[in-house]
Length: 268
Image (cartoon, rainbow, N blue to C red):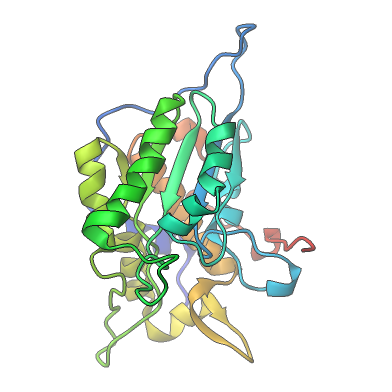
């Protein structure tokens, strides 16, 4: 039987104990004229968060759905790109682009790990407890140097179940390494890996197929379709409030249905 969005949200959020960052919600910065300007949430990440285009439909990244859960005074600038790791994103100059745009009061959400584990590819591979953390520090330090708020997110979990129907983690030590770095640096952590695997467990083997990019020609257990992207974006928005990156007045619709039809795929 299908679960309502409220049931999905409740099941996932109940799986992780509440913990808040040491600092409070980011506040909007004032412009030189004294007016408060719109804050922007930047996303640095991989294909699970990235904007998809018409040729990839129905594949959808959670970053596309995040604005549905934020008030209009908060903008989302999604720089996530398919196939990138914490290393390759930097090496291609993509972090520099974000840092050039960041302003005081903005938020930078960083989610990598899916591609950092590709040990056969030296352009992307990082080791969890050394080079992965080293690269993540560059995002943290760069955001802080510009008066913005860095936020680390563990990788959203893939759809994988064992023979007994238990959801199985697939990211090795990368979530633990990100969690440890967040604690060391005093950075807010969105544990999307823990929340998402709890959600997949609650939904079960068959129901989770409705959240991933399963089509007549493809069985993709990594990338989402519109319902999956919306569900994960809901988790992200909820965690941004729980970790006091945003305030409750910054978000909306956390307990409301968001139509799949709101997702669109622009031309490439």
